[in-house]
Image (tube, rainbow, N blue to C red):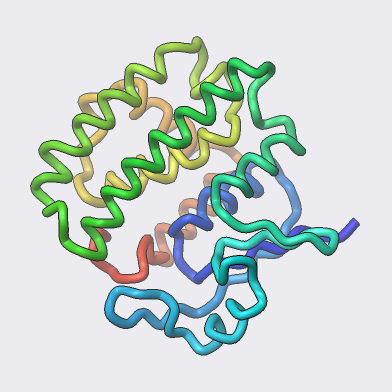
Length: 218
């Protein structure tokens, strides 16, 4: 069996959820990072990517290649890995709850992306309206199931998107999680996980870009 290859740009973005899942679960993979040369807030101007995208489904990344098969779309890749590696809850109800949480976090990410790339909503609306509304919803959902993670005492696939997005939002405002104790405790817990801590600290020290443009970094 070959080692999975993950193709994405040399920034965090949507590919980071998948990287975190691989690293935390000690799943060997090849982390292929393409140079990004953004222009007009777009990522598709890098010469390396211009050539590679011609051969990829939908011309998109992240892209996971494994055993001669190719998978794209972030959610599809995450759920594929969740089913294979036992990160999808213990039954259909838990799997659906994880899907619901994942999609909710993705909706918030869409608002954040509009702020980053199109300046609409404005920063003030993100910090004073959109994020407080959505973080309050996530805080309630964190209390539905007992345990330190979304469900129980071990991460499932949706925990990685939640953690990454919470971490991104702390770059907008360092104390943004202070009013949401369950989310903050979860974020701190994930930062301390043995298989993630060194990677996260290096990522922070290297100031790996969150987005295709530097806006949004502290």
